[in-house]
Length: 207
Image (tube, rainbow, N blue to C red):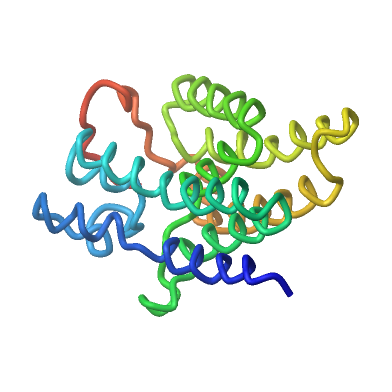
């Protein structure tokens, strides 16, 4: 086995980096005890404002992008795919915090930007449109995350990616959608909180 595969556990460790917790300490908020109690960008935005949310979003995105891109440049696509999966799982199920992680959307976006830039950018645009239309980032995630593997799958026909890449990405998408089960239940009951001005103004309600 190539020594480059050692990048995979390193990607997992980077994925466990507690971005929301560190930003929360800086701004005096604990994302695990406030709002939706999820250590993610949306909850940090809700409880601490746009700046804190943006910092968490950027940090969680880089956790996925950096190890995947390094592996892609140094070791090739199979190792990079392994790093992508590991980074997302590190964010969702960090051993350092008793498996209590986030939902993985931003980190999933980061690994996708590294591996499949054009498809990922399309998914980002779709996420922004749906979130703006619905007022709910959870809806944007639930639409964009499962559709991204479809976009990557189209690239298989052109020979630019291997068939196993959209398959593994789809498996990650299933995990991330499953992490949104509370949001799905609230949406079904009509109880999911809206963020009408998510891109421009702080909103104090929780979800």
